[in-house]
Length: 612
Picture (cartoon, rainbow, N blue to C red):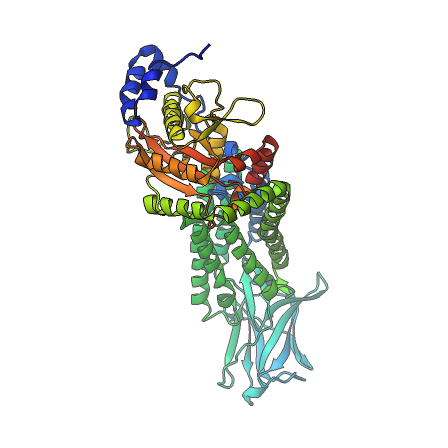
């Protein structure tokens, strides 16, 4: 008994595609029929969890929207939470601004190098002392032993600056590298509190012991103030950094990945602005803060944040890994430049740099490393399948060179290398791209019926074949198929909603309208010449608009992305459903026979490793 036929099916099969529209309208105008074709998806607003749950963590940073994708994972949320805790801890440690030295009993000035490059055996300065709010702090006695000068105050005193006057002798005897210490009777030891060159970070002074060029004018006063001009601004910068980092972590936890991405970009931008402001503060203050090398050290900081912001916010692709790597390079440079030097104050710059170095280096190195390892593992799993496809392609490219070249020439001549409008539109507004998942499934039952009718006609005119429903892999000639509703043919299923969401998020930046293979069908051919003839049939069909042709039977195609598999993909619109883009796969039978369920599962694992 013949299988049941759909209403008006005889009419559709006998019509060209340009005449299908009236029949479709008639079918949709029937109330009972219309309700069967219009099925709104029950899925509401899609989340990034749907599209990223099967992808490997490292690969998320290489998808089309890496920030949002990564924020779906607890590990990345934890990273921002830890960064926030560290920032708050730094703010707590430096909450009291340094206003000078308190409870000091003695001060010691030690020269390390003279202007002529000699190691000093004694210090040649005319005077030395300390001040509090510009007033001289009296001392009990001054003593000199070798290259060190010690001031004994005879009691505990406070001061906020220290100074020395150069001698009246040759400038070659001026100390250009030196450091200053204080003696605290309560702690019972010397503490370094000044140097010929230093960097101020919040309330911490890092002493570099670099060269300080004294004035060539004899007897000149050189005063060193114990203050950080930009300390409060740096404190607020760290506080804002911590608040934003914590907000990003929370946004990821509650499923607001898009908000987290916007906060992340704002974090980079505001960090650039604040650190640039800090640099300007230091630049203006350097004139009266002797020995401050902050201008040199802090210059790369706003530059790093600016480059990072450009990488994640100014391009279509978010280069999050590159941004992290640039931050990592700066931190490593900071460790090299400042690590190991003595310091005074809180927090410890060594611990801060080490902490930042561990976090950033872990992300900058481990993410690419794990991705490489995962790709190698996935490539190893699909290697048997790829070798089969590669061997088959080598055989085809050597035996059917002329036919393959003719195929490529026809595609290039007919459609060129450009693509048409590659977006899905709303049925009632052909100028508005689809935004909801349900929009992609409106009238799909009827649209796929029309596409299959075209497939039967194109296949019949080009000796094409369709996959059979038989258990063993077999095929049936398209010209022998009586109707679209036949049970002989294994038609391609409509793409699952979960995979549509995956593809939109991983490849198309979350744009559902750019997923073009929700509706797809396949034609199989024995010969390359028959496949080319089918392309000619499609190109001559007035009821079809071809928007893109992917010739994966070309020598120029990189088959690594498809694990060696090759075919020709045609994306098109059919009359009556011009708001939809569908896909027709034209496959050589030898390639199709190599496909298997197990091989497809291995390819899915490989695809998840690529996050595509």
